[in-house]
Length: 219
Image 1 (cartoon, one colour):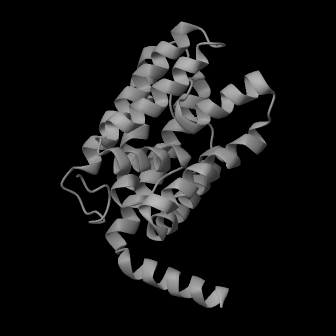
Image 2: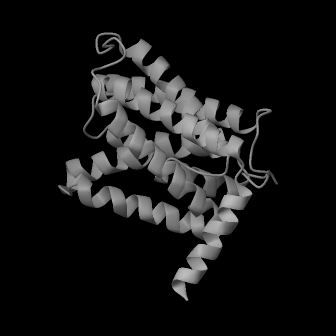
Image 3: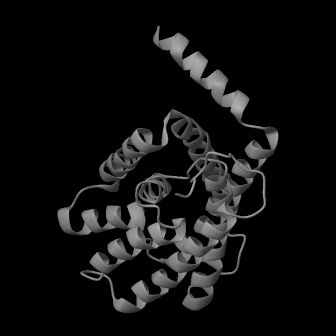
């Protein structure tokens, strides 16, 4: 019975996703993971959302990221399943898998961009562009790249806020709490990158590109 339901669900999901939508999801996953791997991780720019909450819990509670990250993601996806439906979870499973695969791909190569550790402003600006464009393409097709996106989409669905406002709300909240152990200068550049990425995600989500018609309908 369970296998039959899964086959029926995956069959419906594959029928609702066109090749163009699959292309944009894969493209978005590649762009997003490329920027995080080659810019954010090398320059130690702090993230908001689930990643920032994970770092906060690790610092103050001593909880390993290996445990807290899946718990936070599962909580976000549970909320998303309740408010956005099973189709969203199916598309998100595919897009999240694409992001993970691209991470593994980029790790096989040496750094493909110059080291911007000494230029944090440039790193914040360029990193925000990569994440904003990549995640924006994924979100536009009705999926997400992780728990951060799922939580922002749920807030947008429930509150009627613009998506950029929802991303900024979660990111700024976590970054403000992170001031308890991270210097303000690092938080400042993180605020720049999350602001740029949030605005780009919102702009791309509403742009004139192929998309899933049910994604983030406005009230």
